[in-house]
Length: 289
Image 1 (cartoon, one colour):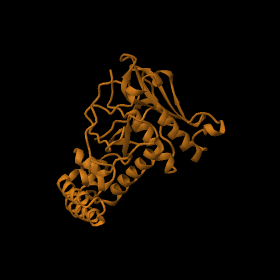
Image 2 (cartoon, rainbow, N blue to C red):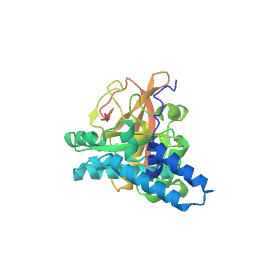
Image 3 (cartoon, rainbow, N blue to C red):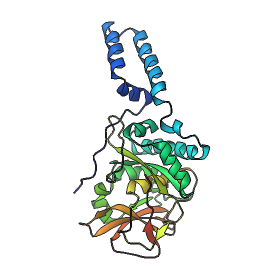
Image 4 (cartoon, rainbow, N blue to C red):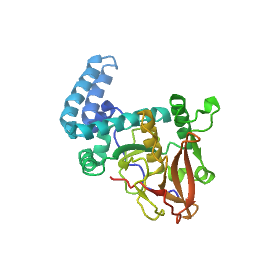
């Protein structure tokens, strides 16, 4: 059943390892000289770094966030990647760099222009897939210890900041897969893949009164990442007065996940409902890629 798109190969998680992947000929040449000197010639390593820097400056000029010249969307995308780095540390995984998405085929400049042209509440969300339920629980517990007024801190026996219904726990791996057809990148050696899309971050789901058939829908990792980013930035969690359908179906296609922030329990709650369910507070946050 777990048959979504496989992660696309990408460069490394640091600029140097990324450049090593892009310029293997330079690396091989200088590494050979280094080994020929018994590994003791520090000049070989310095030469490698200098040559990679020079080649990288030419190749990467105008890529990544450098291609976003308008200050407002540039700030949004910088904040999104900063949030991804903080989230990656909490999950115990590697975070992607903007250039890795560019190399995978994502035009960040075009995505920024779509953000400008769309709703003022569209924000870029860099989301990880494959981290697993336990890692997300640990990340939310850490976040709760920093923001106990917003999330219940389990260390203080205040409750759980991330509540997963039984159906969600049983099929979490299905909801933890990247959406089909969405470009991914995977830091070298990492165990998760990442996507970047624009997600409506309005307080309530912008399209309400809809069944799950009226998509597309944000993924579970996107909604969890969006909430983490907002809470860390001192902003109010979304879905305090609405439920947002999640991408993917459960229970042999009979159920789908939904996301809500429960202010009373100070928790993000993920539950499941029949795909045909409708209501004035249940709806969608269609992503833009």
